[in-house]
Image (cartoon, rainbow, N blue to C red; front, side, top):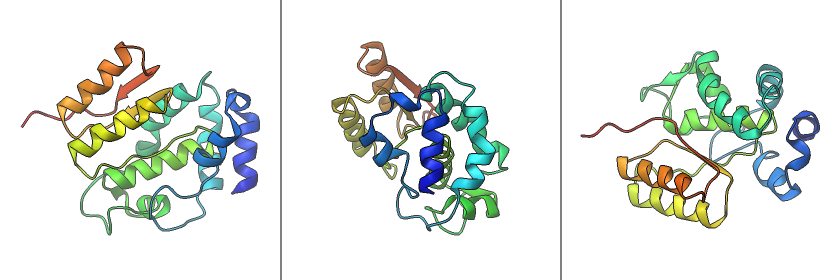
Length: 178
């Protein structure tokens, strides 16, 4: 796990620009939340890194992996999974996951390619989601990828982008109005 994380950073076009503390906190870890600890990095490194490294920035690579990792592994959203916070290999085995399980899989695919990523799980709570967005703005993150709980939070992220407080703000999936 450790050797592959360092190799990904050495080979990624953006690798030299990633500060050591960001690498240690958001690329090196082998777990995101409380999912089962699994040995996923070699498989994901072999499957996703070379394609990610074709992109000039980690943001572009992360966006590509968000769009392609789950479909390429034949994994989709389905509440009929064993548990909500599955490890990536559990998710692949079942072919289904909740939003949390899908997020864990995407984060791990990104980490395997040297893309620093962090999950903020709001558990469907729009106030908590807005708090996370405020925290990320305070931390001056360079970009966010949000799957919003509400249309309001989606608009907050886009507004932050327009005000140039976040370099990249992309909405992974719009929530439909009820």
